Length: 530
Image (tube, rainbow, N blue to C red; front, side, top):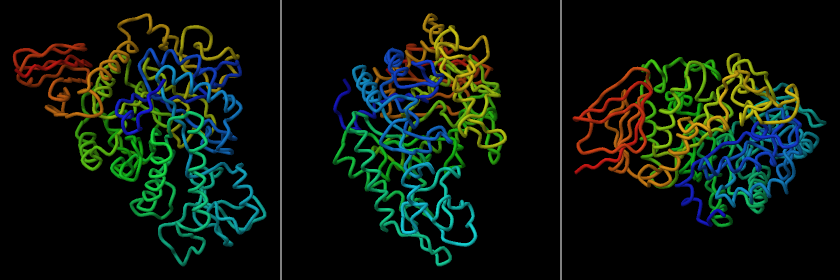
């Protein structure tokens, strides 16, 4: 079973794994993944070595936005199973030393939620943001009920924003409420009740969707930060073992606000997610039109720069200190996978060597451990399209378990699947890579084991960057030399003094005061400075 350590302690050793539940494993043949399917595949996660998983939203929903439109926070969607099925899955994961986190959609509900239906017919209700005007303010949507006026959505129109108040009042917008008004207070209390409900069933915490979006017109998210600080204080008193991770994309603000960890993301106030995109984004797959094209550091041409990520990481860690963690994902349900566009399978080992030895919490998106690709041309499903070149469906295709029909994901007819299987006949599978000791899957497993067994390679400890061009060279804890060359051409640089012993290396040599890394080479070396 998982140990009862406080979240601040166990998160330091966490290797996160994100599961998109409708695409992971289908147990009943309806074409959609479910809790029983996940439970049947827990041995894969245990064998891989991950110890913390988080599920995308699995609550009752009309699924206009793949479950991020919640219609009932206290019950799971029938397509996944029941609350009891989730509790059984959580218990089974715990027996394997794996904690389970849920995705908490804090800033909005579905327009089908009973709270909103009641609010749309009650002019006195303050749970949502309503403007009683003859014309819609920018971005507002006409009331669907007897209540006159318009409501403010938080993302899609079907996702009305919960009212946590406004940080500033404006006479031109008299509908604004202060953060301590009745409606905002009720919503803050509801968040406690929702978290308390699921933590009481054995869950280990939450990843909070759009965590910065709660209080409106909030310069610097100061009032939103106060809200989360208040909730973290309650959580520490009521559930000290529970973790709170944010989808904020700005760790130096979100962690001081009360979150245990935040992700570098493909969006956020720091250059619209540039720190993460400067590593992985190769202008294929999910592309937001405002983004300026850039060559990623992990690009075969070797024209990217590591400094953008490094500067952001240094700035954030300088603010956070020991108060929490930054998480670095391989990808996620909203962003292209590592294997996207021109990035080929031979480039992935170097990326994982970096991600699993850098002092951030690694978050592996399901299937990235075998090199599943972003599948172009995947049909739009459940609100996946965000722009002309931004359809998230290509990152949400079914997990590829083996070479049986539907890649072992489901026994349903192919046309009934949640999304089509990658049609590439050479698609990687778990079974195929389990049988190959030289596969990416085995490498990821070894790197996870090395990280867990070697304190210096974890989330804490020192990091000295010796070379931030090609190859990337850094020393962890004064004892381990890491070399990563993401480009196709060989690269050389000076080696630190002392003898080195290869721990996990491919295409990297250290000799006579020089490091030589072949194209896409990587290496972890024990360093004897004496």
